[in-house]
Amino acid sequence: MLLAEVVAASAAVAATRSRTAKAGLIGELLRRAEPGEVGAVTAWLAGEPRQGRLGVGWRSLTARAHTSAAAPGLTAAAVDAALTELAGTSGAGSAARREAAVGALMSAATADEQHFLVRLLTGELRQGALEGVVLDAIASAAEVPATAVRRAFMLSGRLPETAVTALEGGVAALEAVRLEVGRPVRPMLASPGSSLDAALTDLGGEVTVEFKLDGARIQVHKDGDVVRVWTRTLREVTDGVPELAERVRALPCATAVLDGETLALDDDGRPRAFQDTMSRFGSDAADAGVLLSPFFFDLLHLDGRDLLDEPLETRLDALAGLLAGEEQAALRMPGVRSPSTEQAAQVLDDALSGGHEGVVVKALDAPYAAGRRGKAWQKVKPVHTLDLVVLGAEWGYGRRSGKLSNIHLGARDPDGGDPVMVGKTFKGMTDELLEWQTATFPGLVRESHEWGVLLRPELVVEIALDGAQRSSRYPGGVALRFARVLRYRPDKGAADADDIEAVRALLAGG
Image (cartoon, rainbow, N blue to C red; front, side, top):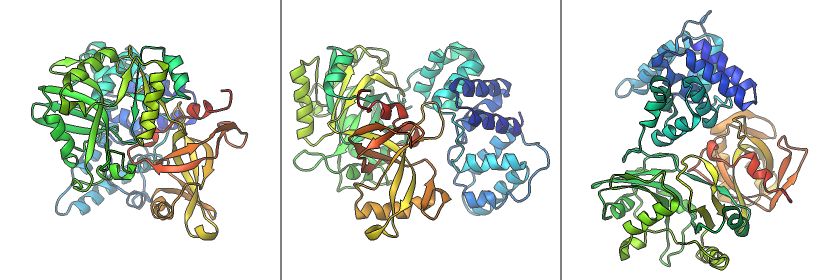
């Protein structure tokens, strides 16, 4: 398959807003790909190289784009091989070898292919093919049920491998993918709930109501004395959190996969600032001054038994048995199972008085649906909050002169398009945050204007708001009311942001 075919398909996908059409275009491309090309092509259509970030900058790429091939000749396999070579180039003289490799690749590409490669390698290839669209495309190309593809992806965690499995082995190969202790599973996510009463009514009486901590999501795997820890984005952080590994290593089991949250507590047992918790995930060495405490709310595997497909009630019973000792009980997420309305309200009050965000209401009959933000788990907070993408920023006035201040906010498009702008805000920003924005945003600029900058949609910020209102000013038809910045979320990417439907759900009467 020629790279030009991939470039043409990428352009066609970007040109349509129809989710079905996007999946059809990608599926057709995957059907034409050679077996050794499927993984790479899948990764590219999802917006990134199969090898991950390669550390090649925009300037380095565009400097070698002055000369281009007259006609398409590069194959997908050749490009993938060049990227693999680039990823493995290190050591003495590696800078020169990397420059030469980039130069050879770019000079062999046509102008259109060069433009595609620049966007692919700098993380700016946004053609509206989110994971869900690509998963549907894989199912179509392989002529297998979408449910089988989604489950295999949940357990393997990577789109390219899932595509190869589906197209080479079909349903049997997909169903053979199992949970492996030591390989992270994509986490199950919670949807925003409008209120505690609404969540209880929606899910019925057979629920558990648990604290929603102001911490970081973790998934911990235990295999004998080997313990590994991943974040919600499946980034391994084991070396930086030895105290978490030590607590899990002491559990009375041979193998386990636990899901939970961790946060830093002060001497009174109250949560420290979110930034204190996240600081432990930003460096290679543990900060002895900030110790993390784990709180587990789910158990996906225990001593050879996979629990993913079991109802939550069964998983909670297994978790309670594992954490039955006095010392282990402190590792349980606080909550009440099958509460009365009064008991549920008390859990929420206890969480808030303890300095936490709110509660999560979970249906006891629900299996673990990893990677999906369904209605089986609903998070309830007293103040509406949304995780939104920063699309741009305006230069400030007065005491904020010279600072990038008023930020433009976008909600994720569930159909895979660009984020949908829903408002602006400069409220809630400390002087320290303004300094950080002004220093950080230039590295993400895609357009500069006299009034400010437009940014690549990579940063996620948590916004508190009083609700939403209908608006003809923004393309989504909805605008935020009294939005203010709570904090940036370095633990989340643009794909983890709340979508436009979550914003519309906050409309009065909606």
